[in-house]
Each structure stands twice: as structure tokens, then as C-alpha cells.
Image (cartoon, rainbow, N blue to C red; front, side, top):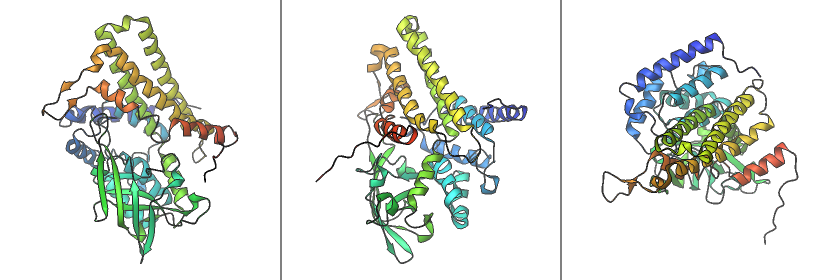
Length: 402
């Protein structure tokens, strides 16, 4: 594992850092540091403009092949870009799901027509995407989805419900898993992967108000919503393979940017501890040191996992990643509250009376990180995956139901 950066890589770092410093210090200064976890609702119009500015300047989809509109950057340079973006306080990306999930999926599994129609809007930052996976009875057990798609001529009509759909109320499209063969055994064999326009009759989006007072997650109801036959990716009943490919892309180089954002949050907590004197408490100081060590372990393990041969299957160590960072991040939220002390229980009234309270960044961090160990696969499911797929242990016993 050689994680050293070449002179060419360092020159690229200087280019990326200079561009981000200039652009986030000018007309986009107001979006710096906004739009992260628990703050996704902030400054949508301004961040959407930033998304398109990134696209016009060639800073979206940096790891995509050049023939699909990307920069074709090496893994090292992708790592540099994501880390520099987070270090500069780049705002939460509205185009993350398109760039990091569905775009690479269309490149890997889509046909030339799908690539030509969908990829340019993602690169340009003009079309936003949502993920239609989870359902009320199919979260971590994704094969249990009940949303169905039935043929209607050359097209498909989709009926069902998705939940916890991030940013669906702002999105133009969603990639949706739907059951196209209800009799398939095992269940995952009867699933297909559709690209579905959200701005149509037959789609209802209901925001979910969370404990943070914001509503970045949604319920999405489909009632004979139309998906074109040409917008089915990977073929009928082959959606499970495509869906697993999408999840694999989710663990890519952008996770290093996520960890740099974690570093920014930890630095903020340390700054508060210095300002209010809790840095002198040996227990608090040890917890801060442990958080620093845990973040360094996270970074090096991610680099190790990403540094395998190109095209090789991810090593078993990949399976610990989500479980590790979710627990670390949740603990950081708890540490932030302990550093604040009694001040953590207070929030300033919002500008508009009667609309609740404006949370501080630390309070948003604490409240949002309660969900880290649930979404994208709960801790319990992650441990099952590690035990069964990485360690080869017997599968969890199934409870018979009548």
C-alpha cells in the first residue's frame, strides 16, 4: 500500500485549493460550511447555484471517465479533491446522489442512450436525484420491497411507497427499486431498477419533520407513476445486481471528504472546549484525544481499502467501514454536548416567532448523529453482514411465522 502523493498530485492539490479558496471567499462565501448533516435544508437556492458553478468550472464528477464528462482523476487525486473541498468548507453537495450513486451506476450498467440522456445533467449540476430504496417494511432488508411495477405497453406503471428519501422534494428524478416478478424465489430475483421522473402526476412527496425541526427526508408515494421502458437499467428482474453496484459506489473516494468534514466538526468541538475551559478536564481531554485517534484510524483504513488493485472486488475489511464511522460520529455528537455542558440545552429563538428554535451546529450534530447507526444499514444489520460475509459464520436463525 503506497499512499504517498506524487509531485503531480501535490500540484493538483495546489490547483484545487486555490480554486476553492477563491470561489468560496467571493460570491459564494455565504454557503461555506452549510448544508451538512442536519443542515441540508439551508440555503437551497444558493447551493443549487454553487452546484451549477462547480459543473461549469469542471469540478463535478472528477472521478468519472472523460468520455462521460468527468476528469478521469486518479484515486489519489480524487482523495485530494474531496479532502480539499471539505477543508475549504465546501457546502453540502446537492448533487451527491447523482454524482456518487446513480451516475456511476448508469456508466457501469446503463446503455449508451441512457448515458447520453442522464449523465450531462448530473455533470452540469442542473438535475438533482433521489434514491428510492427504503420502504416502511423494507429498510435494511431491501429484498423485502413491496413497491411494484407492471407493464403498460412499452412503459411501466409504478405503485408503492418509499420512505426516508433524502431531498426528494427538491429532486427531478429518483432511481427506484420495484418488484416486477412477485412470484420470484428468492425475492431479490424479481426486482428491477427504474429511473423515474418525480415531477409527474402519480407522485406525491410528503416531507418528514424530524427532531432537528427540518425536513430533508421524505415519504414518496407512487400511484401508477410512469417510468419509460427505455429508463429501466440493467434489464427486467436484474435490478438487485444493479442496486448492489450502486451501494458499492457509495463507499468510494468521497468517504475521505466525509471524514474531513468530521475533522472540521471535531476541530469545532475542541475550539469550544478551549474557549469554555473544559479542555482542562482530564476526562474531556482524553475523550477528545480518543476522538482524534479514532478519526485517524478511520482515514488510514479507508485509504487502505481504496488502494487495492483497480477493478478488484472490495476486501472484507470494507464491511467494517459503515459500522465504524457511524459509531464514531454518534459518539462525537455526545462529546459535543458534554463539552457544552448546560449550554447544550439552550437554543436561540428563530427569527420568525412561532417557528421553533434555531439550533447551533453542535446541537444539530448531536441530534442528527442519532440516525447514523440506523440509516444505510443499521448497526445490527452491519454486524450480521460482517459475521456472515466476512467471517463466514452461520447465518442468523430465521424465526418461523404463521
